[in-house]
Image 1 (tube, one colour):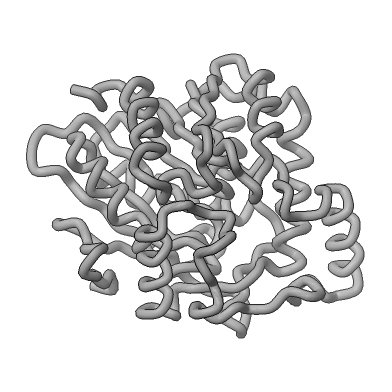
Image 2 (cartoon, helix red, strand yellow):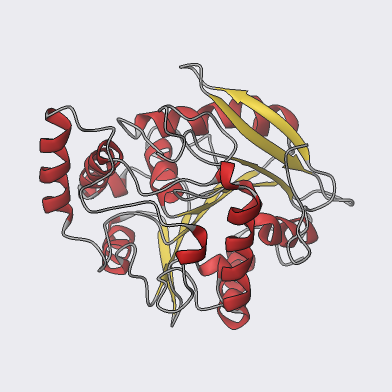
Length: 314
């Protein structure tokens, strides 16, 4: 098994590793866990950009403790899944429809045949946007979705979406879509200091993520490529049309971080208002990775999750 345990971050017991093959031939790493007792359904843990299954061991354990089976996978271009470019540090797609293929293949080959229904999505950041894109076409994928800090617009650390879209589109037309954006670089793990990081205010969980990267550099990637940014902008542009939000027929809970600088909390609020069966809560003081935040903030998250997902609080 390719999953590695750490003293402060053990692999939850019972992991069954699987390989998913997408419609365009990409191999994805996936895994399933089953709780010891009665099963209340399956929570599909769907990551953000640059993440892997290892980052979610704690969350998986908490879901198992609630009586859910858990299924998860690594997106193409990151974690233990196939990399498209020769440089494995480049997480790259030309269009977000590629991520839709990943999610659909995972559901068809892992979740639906091997896990108990009903199926619930717990998705973070980029994963939240992909879930919304799939949900607008099909009501059958999930019974309910919990989207944490979904990527609906860039936060305060980035230029505006319009500027990024125009610039990335122009570079892509010049044949530079596979390149990193000008001025970006791959930071070494030891350079990623805790102070001022935009992801979490919890030092222990921050250091736990760094430990995974140091032990398993093969799972890590650097900044998004220019094509990835252009694809993300096009996907966010589509989602900004009010008809997009109104087309979602799956009950959805959006959870925003009050201090998010990576994605826009305002865009999340606007999108939720346009949904027919969507609701939103904000975790005050939380940074982008709410599930990796300090315990009081995570407690607020789990209280909302338990109230929204049927059977969770039993």
